[in-house]
Every structure is written in C-alpha cells, then in structure tokens.
Image (cartoon, rainbow, N blue to C red; front, side):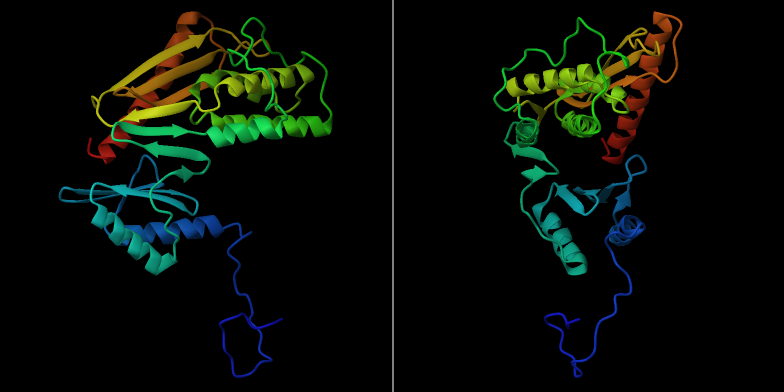
Length: 301
C-alpha cells in the first residue's frame, strides 16, 4: 500500500487502515440520509411527513425548499441569497458540487421560461431507441394495439437472454412514464409479464418503441400562472385482464392547468360489477388527492 496523495507522515512505512467503507455497505444510504436530515433540521428545515425526502424552511416571507434523491439534491426558493447561503452551508459540511440552475436531473431535462417549466426525457427516450436498435423504425400513432389483449400464455417463451432484455426494456419504459403519461397504460400491461415474457409481449414492447419514435420530445408543462385548484379524472375497465379477471384503474390529477399525477394500475381484487370497479377507482383517486393536499399544506398552499 502507498500513502494517499496529500497525506504527509513521518514514517513512510505506515499504512492507512480503512475502518468503514461508505459504498457497498448495507446501511450506507440510511446513514447518509440520517446525517443529511439531521443537518437540515438543525438549520430550521422541517421534514415533510407526506414525503420524507422533502425539506422546507419558512422564515417570514422567505421560502426555501430542498428535495433529496440519494446524494442528488434540488434546492429552490423565492430568495436567491437564501439559496446561496444554504448552498454554502452544504458545501462546508459535505463538500458538494454546485451544478448551477436546474437543467438535467436523473434523466429529466428541465427548461424554464417566464411562462413556466418544461419537463421531458428526450435524451433518455432516444437512448432507449438506440440501445434497442429501433432508432430508424417507422413510428406508430398509438402506444399499443388496442384491438388485441395480452395474455400470459400468448406466444412462445423467450430465451433467457431475450427475457433479460425484455425486463430491462420494460424497466426503462417504466421510468419514462415520469414524463410520458400517454404510455402509462401500455407499460402497465407489459410489466405484468416480466416473470415469463413471450415473443408476443416483446412485439407489444416494440410497438411502444415505435410510438416513442414519433414523440421522443413529449413533455410536461407546468404553467407559472394558474388557479391553485386540484382537479382529478378517474376511469377504469372491468375485468380487462384475461388471466386474473381483475380490472385496471386509471386517473389523472391536475393542479390548475398542469398535470401533476397519474396512474394506471391493476386493482388488487376481482370486482363483481362495473360499479364496484368505478368505486375502487374513485377510492384510489381520492387517496392520491388527499396525499397531494397534504403536500400542498406543507408548502402552505
């Protein structure tokens, strides 16, 4: 072993013994978040009970918001000097790297104008098409063929290598639904067959990719001016799954004119009537609305 650069010791025969490794340690992420959250709380930040990765600080009319994902942090507020002060404190304690104004975060591309914020995953979508060899394919107008229903037994099983590629592709498509709600239902259908996919399921996944070829820059827009009101739309299908006869819930939630939440998910139980399906869908939508209400209360909206 050699002495690390920058460390001067009297005896060159001395070595450094590693007492605790941060990476590859099961408790590393927990310890890091505990350290970070305790630091923020000591500086008058309040941790949200609805989203534990959200920290807020209110000092009179000054609002500062900090959002954490592992070791990536978004910091915003209504006073730039306050943001700069928090950034300096974080740098003194953790030696952070300030990347400036938010433009790229975890595969999300952010563009700000005076009218609002655009959020998209164009590069991420193009990477998926390139890695799948579908960059030069002919685009489709819909994310899936709605005239056919997928089943677990439809088609022939894929090989181990192809099955792994299918799972990886569906996993990437699931992350793409963060900014592409129009493929949420199709991806929800594909994700049901990740245990034992077939060639039919793979063709359905390629259908989604051909749809993305025509809309790689599909984005969400959050308007700067609007009515602070939550509006939700709920729908469902009855016994749509051919294998389990379970139904699918879908909803959209708007804050003003901006789409902020959506979901397409198979219900956990079998419903005996279409009315029961609708009530379950409304219950899921209401839970989402209640959670968003708690988030807005944290922001004092």
